[in-house]
Length: 222
Image 1 (cartoon, one colour):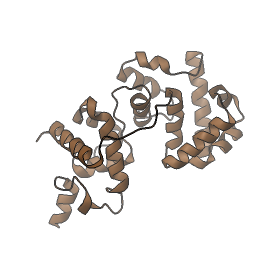
Image 2 (cartoon, rainbow, N blue to C red; image 1 turned 90 degrees about the vertical axis):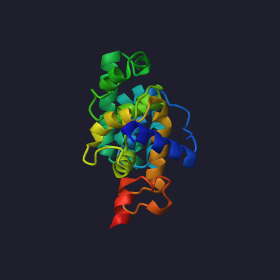
Image 3 (cartoon, one colour; image 1 turned 30 degrees about the horizontal axis):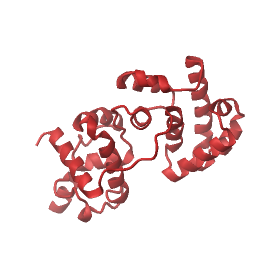
Image 4 (cartoon, rainbow, N blue to C red; image 1 turned 135 degrees about the vertical axis):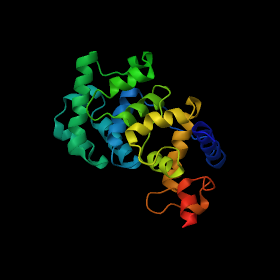
């Protein structure tokens, strides 16, 4: 089978196994952007705690932008790397204000996926994954984010070339999966990576994809 048929097979098998995934109510794009920055190098629980505390202390993004940096760092400390993320978030909010005159990303709805992704990635600390998350989950645009779980799982499955970088994997997997599959494939691959295809001890024996997974097939031959 070709790559696109392989992508459909993976998506359909995961839909049979997990069902169609549910997602929380979409956040405004600026909220999703800040939340995703907080999520870097931490888990969802710590990200959400930090985000809630930040909004509790500073109800408006202008207040976050103008607050003493140490107060922002203190508010987001549960997300880890707060000394880096705090100044980065404030710098981002200042630059958005300078460019747009306000802290609002709704205008990106009028952009193409490529244009919106390029604009978001023009800011320090915003890479292809962060941009794609904002586009997919806040703006409803056809973008396929590749996080650490999807990168690992796609490599083991043989969905992408083994040595392909995470950055290049965004564009590559966006071609493998049809646009209408992005949402479900993204969330179900992450779930598979968390629950079964873990980094250190993958549970290949119970994986719903083990009959065509390159990693499992090679392991069973040894």
